Image 1 (cartoon, rainbow, N blue to C red):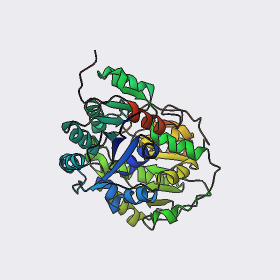
Image 2: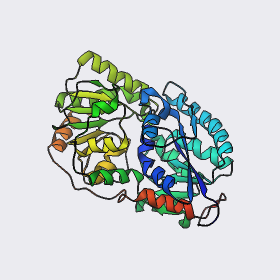
Image 3: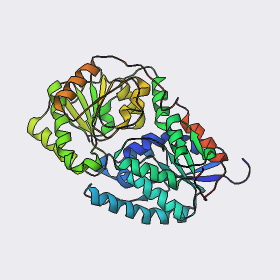
Image 4: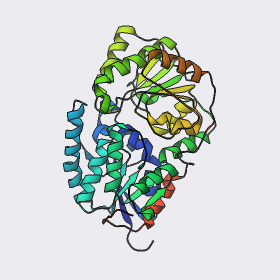
Length: 389
């Protein structure tokens, strides 16, 4: 590439967003023809969600701006209002930074705020993880962001085909793989080593510590915005199943979605009332140490896409609960169950006894970050769009 370096603005708004995009941040930062403009916003700034910004800065990244845009309450109304505030605040940030491209990640409401703000400022939008199927509000957001985007960095060939069926120009749709797999591939190449999970959590975890040298499972269960009235029941059923099975468990706090306040309150109340001796609750880990924890786990349960993506690559057995990941491509590591205590308990015992599943590369081979950076440096930039027939 000749001429000036392109300014790439990447917006991180939540714990999963950083893990999903970290390898792209590294590749953009290190690329000779690109300048990284990192914006950190929303729940990534808040203590109750693990202050992801602290992990980001510890990794050597320096945000050029922070955006407080989250309306407290974590319900359907506050999600909509937070989206509106995000559009207002990010518009000012983008106007000041004047990036050549804004990169938006996945399918959260903050993601659509990013894409709308950039689009109305005539800034090309790149989108990571388009074309996937899950149902719920996430799928509406993901496909809407696809239509607002000019460059598409999808995780699989099936996802690429879906984006093309939405009328996007084939020359703008790249099957790069998922950047989160880059971290998993990096950790998989390491010799297995122990790390002190309790040192990293900095006292933010509560409950009975789990010995990482022995067998344990991981639980990551988030509320489903389109099933927000069932959030209490869903969290309680999984809690009872995990407590009953008795396997030592690392249970991660939910994402900031509609219903997360309800889910969090259920976790707190259950811990105080029952003091489950096999569960340690925690908010956040660095992306690398989370993958180290996952790699050594007997099983992961809940409804996080981590069970579908990273665990699939690593060959960690997974119990996917409910509808949140409905329709997403799966590897042989996943068993699906309903929100039923007996089903969950039975699946947990079975999956935890399996040992390693067969790893697969549905979502990439570990080189997505470099591919995306190279495309960002060389792709033709255009803000005009028409449906490709």
